[in-house]
Image (cartoon, rainbow, N blue to C red; front, top):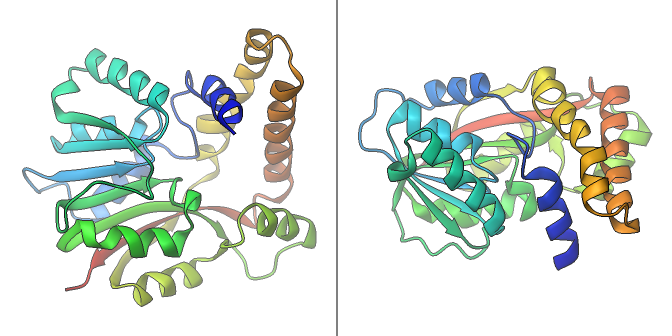
Amino acid sequence: MEELYALLAALHRPCRRQGPGSAETSRLAMRLAGLEQAKGLKIADIGCGTGASSLLLAEDLAAEVTAVDFLPVFLEELQQRARARSLADRIRPLACSMTELPFADNEFDALWAEGSVYNMGFENGIRTWRRFLKPEGMLVLSEITWLSDVVPAEIRAYWEKEYPEIATASGKIAALERNGYSPVAYFALPENCWRENYYDPLRERFSVFLAEQGHSDRAREIVAMEEQEMALYEKFHQFYGYGMYIARKRA
């Protein structure tokens, strides 16, 4: 498993993003969450990768951001990018598992998690993390979501094997309500968040990555896995995508 993580980190580290998203959709989520006018915010960015969201939160909101990822190489890259943008004093990197966060109860004004909660499961994640939010604190996360309740068997079988918790937005919103949140807003990420911002830069990495890894069998397997996911998105993108969910912790 350590070899797999090391190879995935090597493939993804140079990319601006490790999943679908954009500065525009992150900023829209900030506005919908009511964070733009707030001062002195403390935010945890859980599963931050190389920090696309952390940098934006620190820059746009002047927030104190705790950037959490279990891969130290991603946090090293984040620190380099933060220094280049004069944001290092606002971002605290924290290398740990999102299942074992060392936070105090009611510590944060907002929890941010773009494309990462699937690592522990949506419902488990929102239930576990809730105690770290202040009363009325905001949860903002993106999550793989069915865009229709009628889905072709091929893509349903793929995603239900990869991530059994995939569901429609109504199912995710119901889970938020069950676990002590009041839903505030939802929107689906546009296709450019997948293509131009995630898949295209990743695809450009393949040949360099394979050369770096000596075209090892394991490296070729990882590229083949990524190429399969890309091909499925091109074929079935009208049926699934990422949904951005914004919710407030109920007292």
